[in-house]
Length: 158
Image (cartoon, rainbow, N blue to C red; front, side, top):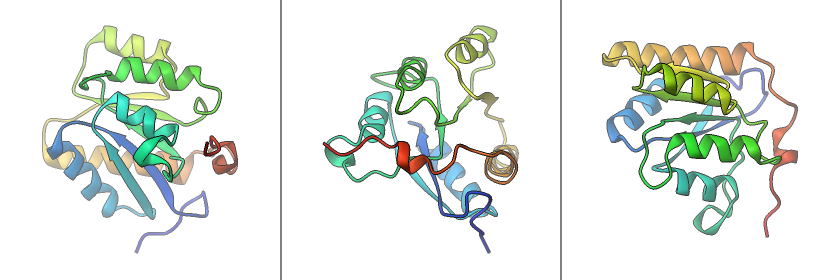
């Protein structure tokens, strides 16, 4: 049975991913996890910013406690999105985990220069991928102390 973890409430995760298989595996892994969570999925950086800024169809979006970000996205890629999030005073405290197939040193260095909280290369096998997602859950929601009540830092609705 999933618990509420260290946050003492339901954990909100924003998954920015355009690969349907990776979305399904990520949701499944978090579903089997120990922490009660809600995963919202957007397919590209443009949608992600609309979600984070609560625009249009995302007017009632929850403030995510964590963002899982793929780098290779259509329209606005993950690097551009990461830079935009970390430059925004209302969003920069949200931890961003780059979760990508890239193993390129340039991508790793650039992600950290843009203030990613960590960089994880997606494993090749399904079992390894599930294991990595469970490790992310354990670290970020059971071990790490996140800023208090992030909801109060959320952008007010316009």
